[in-house]
Image (cartoon, rainbow, N blue to C red):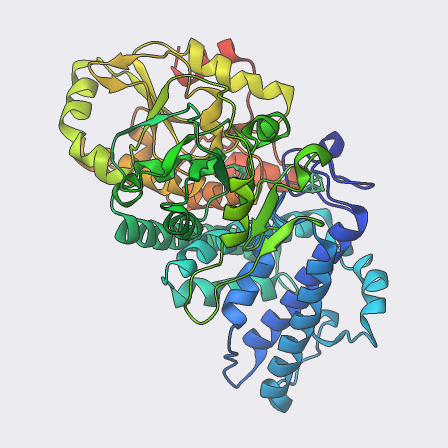
Amino acid sequence: MFCYQCQEAAKGTGCTIKGVCGKSDTTSNMQDLLLFVLKGISWYKENSAHEIELEGLDRFFSQGLFATITNANFDQDYFERQITQALEYRRAAASIAGDSISSDKPDAAVWQPASSAEYEIKAATVGVLATENEDVRSLRELTVYGLKGMAAYNEHADNLGYEDKEVTTFMYKALAATLDDTLSADELVALVLETGKFGVSVMALLDKANTESYGNPEISEVSIEADTNPGILISGHDLKDLEELLEQTQGTGVDVYTHGEMLPAHYYPKFKKYENLKANYGNAWWKQNTEFESFNGPVLFTTNCIVPPKDSYKERIYTTGASGFPGCTHIPERVGGNPKDFSQIIEHAKRCAAPVTIEKGSIVGGFAHDQVFKLAGPVVEAVKSGAIKQFFVMAGCDGRMKSRSYYEDFANEIPKDTVILTAGCAKYRYNKLPLGDIGGIPRVLDAGQCNDSYSLALIAMKLKEVFELEDINELPISYNIAWYEQKAVIVLLALLYLGVKNIHLGPTLPAFLSPNVANVLIDTFGIAGIGNVEDDIKLFMGA
Ligand code: FSO
Ligand code: SF4
């Protein structure tokens, strides 16, 4: 195996024996092989003179990309089944294309195993390192990782019945382009930036899907304390799964608790109506090994981030959607417009003890674009009067590396007349700190999940308009973003597309940026890493 797609890549270069995330060598290779066949399908979509529209392909394609995201799916059998199905889709695509394709076909479009026994042999040869030139490899992978993040957001929108055909069309085009050996470095850089453009589109689509389905997030106080009923802990990002689980648990005596990235569900008016949506339990994804023990009840993963479960609670772990873990129960897809069947996990919860309270108090959030626009008056006044000197966008992810304590220290040490705008699980480093408020405006404004970074971009654009500025970069906003996996990559590319400059990315720069590609990002966009808290604060504050 060779994988360097996340921030925790071994030795800062890549995992080669086993993933730091827990992904096995063979599962990693199978993910590469699935991606390889998906590239083959994309190639037919792009090169055929006949239009290729296959029933269920768009969703299959998005889910395939999504399942290869860090910490989403560890189930090798799942990947083998997906590869078999992808080969069937590719055969159907090739048959529609017929002889309308005259150009030489790449291996991804023609490789044909005699049986699934050949998967493992091929899988070991089609990964990241199959591209020899490190700069081409870097630009291709930057595109692929952006597409994986895009696929995740696309699937959440799709689950709510929202689709943007331009986004899916771009996904095929871009994935097919990663097979094209004739593209120059400049053309590949342009492809990366175009990926950012569609990153904005997909986040706008998901924002529309979420807000039209569940209302606009509003300022909310969310309990972090456990109650006395048994509970189900729901993790990940998929709001449709949450809605159906809440419906099915009503009146059963089982409460639902959110975990990690599901916390922002409490900010939506529609979810507030469910009395059985009890509280948020625990912290960022990487602490689940201890927090799931004390939760006592079953845990439902709707997406990443899964930490390989300990035997002590493994039988309580359920997965659904693109997520999966071998030996854990997987709740199947919706069929014929019917909701998923959560009866098994609900029955399981009834047999469990209530969660142990591990924290006391509450957290405040719900500062997505609509809510912040409503507060625009006081916020603008506070900026004009100098009560707020600066904003820090600290969106992104948390992770287990010790060096991430930087973000807690940074939040603690920035001047008291500054405000943090956050989204994603990065917030758990500082959303329980007593950072106070500025004239009633909390110093940490949480917009929601990582995809709600889109809200932060809208807020920045609104402030630019209010202050009549030419350039978004003239605002008193600094970007100090923590990244972990590929959704953060699409958020980053989207911000670059929107013209945001001088983003600091940490705790380390991606291993998949070759020195030359890193230099392009540094020279063109002012991307930088992080240093120590004191020096960085001076730098950001222009001191
Ligand atoms: Fe975090 Fe995991 Fe939301 Fe990611 S829980 S790390 S960027 O999946 O998607 O922020
Ligand atoms: Fe390593 Fe990250 Fe890849 Fe897992 S996802 S194998 S930790 S680089």
